[in-house]
Structures are given as structure tokens and as C-alpha cells.
Image 1 (tube, one colour):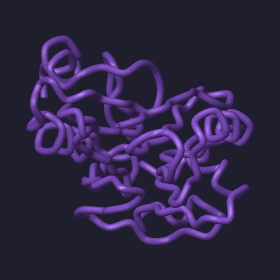
Image 2: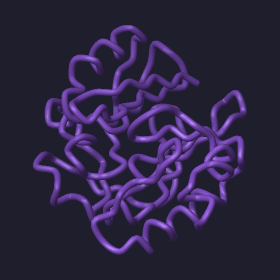
Image 3: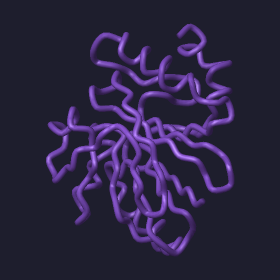
Length: 189
């Protein structure tokens, strides 16, 4: 499996390309602000053709770049009001696209429509793209009561195996095990 990530925009939000291999169709996750040029470069470098745009949540640093594409952005309905372009509803469950099987997992808390995308690599590993819910050493902020975010962390992310690789919305990759053991917000969750 091919996973390509890069940070873009003033908030350095991570955008990811997921594909079974180079030279085919791919999924673009979180095409955020100022991502157009690095996204075009990554697609060209790996010979990829995007077939779907997915968002972990509706904040502009994660979705603004979708406005420059002909593809609709798939976004949880609870976050549609934050995106001015064409958005398709994104529901919980399995999503088969571009030769990948993604699990769409609701993670309300950072935003009402925050979701994670989980998948198994053909090589056997597990990945979860957590948007702004979980970072290396931290968790996302919430504009409402923190109970919803804490519940999402406890019931959806901490139930994953320790070797699951976390690809967050900002900052470096980590693992569930590392975060379970050292993340101050998760140690108390």
C-alpha cells in the first residue's frame, strides 16, 4: 500500500494520499488550505489519479483545497455548514473506493462531524487517520463540552490495537500504543 502525506497551509495541516500502489487510483484525505500545489506534485510523482476526496472534519485547514477539484468532498453531514463547495454525505461504515476498504468511524468532539478513517494495509499493518481528534502527544481542542471528545477517544480510538499507526491531522505519525502510554490526555481518559 502507498501512503503519501504532506503538511500544507499556515496551520500545517496534513493531507494524505492512499492507494494500493503507485500508478493508479487514490483517495485524498483532508485536501486543506494551500494544498493544491503539493497535492498536484505528489499525484504526478506517484502517477496517481484521485477518485474521491474525504475529510476528517469541516475546518478550512482540512477542506479548503477541495474547492479546486471536480470531485465532490465527502464530509460528515454535521460539518457541511463549514464547507462552501459541493459536499456529499459521509456515513459511518465501510467505504470501498480506489481498491481500498476504509472504515468510517464517527469521532464527535473536535467538531460534531469529526470522523476517522481506518484501514488495513495489504502488508498486514493497521492505519487510522484521526484528523484533529488525536495527535502525537496531544488531543484536539473542542469548542463544546469535552465529554464528547473524551468519549470518542476512549470508546473508538483506545480500543484499537497498540500497533495501529496513527496519521493525525497535524504533526508526526505515532501509534495507539505510544499514545496510550505517554499522551497525557489519554493516560487519564
